[in-house]
Length: 248
Image 1 (spheres, one colour):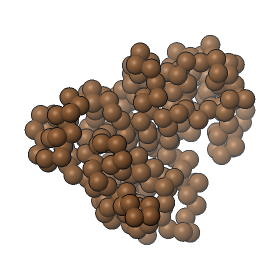
Image 2 (cartoon, one colour):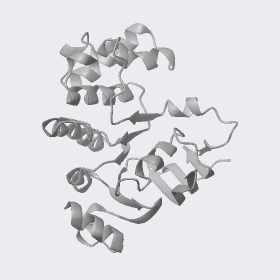
Image 3 (cartoon, one colour):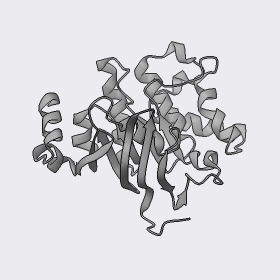
Image 4 (cartoon, rainbow, N blue to C red):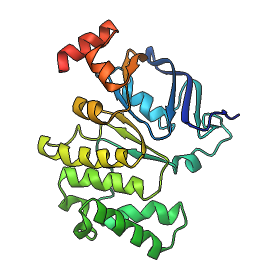
């Protein structure tokens, strides 16, 4: 089954995820449009990361549907790996292969999954490394890089697949404070270039500056969402008011 609206990249309908007697996601409906930067915030354990990881079925929903580019990826007959190639994912902990060089980490998926030639994949990897100011690290190993550099490489690895959307799961929370800025700067650059992004983060400054929309999840439900100005300056939901009063 497919959905109609061309502008909608991801459509979530009636999403539930249950672990034992814990209802992590409780009936979420949402749409992510092309070119949007949707920032997801909420207290710990509220379901933000579960929601994000459900979008590419790293968490398989117990109920509900997720449509990506019009295709119901929760359908058992759909080859999810094919669709995942178009959904970049950046985790909290980089997930780089320690025994491979930076360039090898970046070219692995394009070679294997997109069938690119080594020459093509290497060229693209070097272009991307150049762009993030890390071209000189191409032959280094992950252990030789700082946390901020590793996270920028993880983002580059996603970009090497030419994704239609990138999902970020708390991309700066494992970093030392002085490294957070370099990663957020790269994400801001991607936003300016029109990359569709869904970002789970604690960085409220990023949400204010870059988000086209901010979503507040609490107890597995979307309690409120709005454009950043409205969201931060005029919160309506009591739980959101309480949440913002503690962190701002």
